[in-house]
Length: 167
Image 1 (spheres, rainbow, N blue to C red):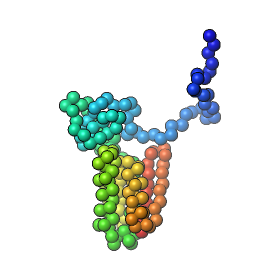
Image 2: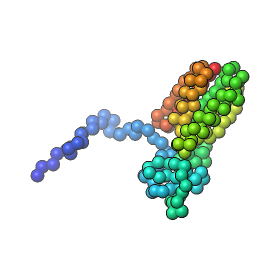
Image 3: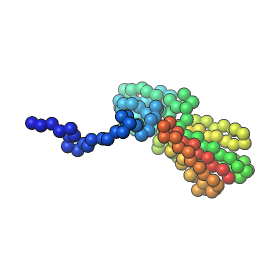
Image 4: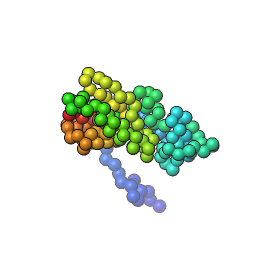
């Protein structure tokens, strides 16, 4: 019986730097699969069927902090949405209503997509989120509704997205 270096279905990986580079590093993603069901003590979201959901937790559920509550506790956002410009200032209430409605729709299906804070800074509004896709989606919704200038800056090493909308 002979042994080959690569088993069927596997191939040899050529490495030039002697290190494997991790594609996305998210310190808030569980390292191992959670036991099911698991309930978050802070927000009552339940990890069931491989994802966090808004369902009633069984009495025998394990307890853990969900990634969104963990980020909120650590004040470590994944997404930043910066809103600025004359049009924004003159339509601020209407635009912020759209931002909050978008978050509410997303949060109903995805408990980990939440707004963390809304801050006024130097003539702009900064919305921080627990998820990069929520920040991106809010920016796209604003651009679709009002046009303006939309920019994205993604940092893959930190799994961090900065979205800037100006109008």
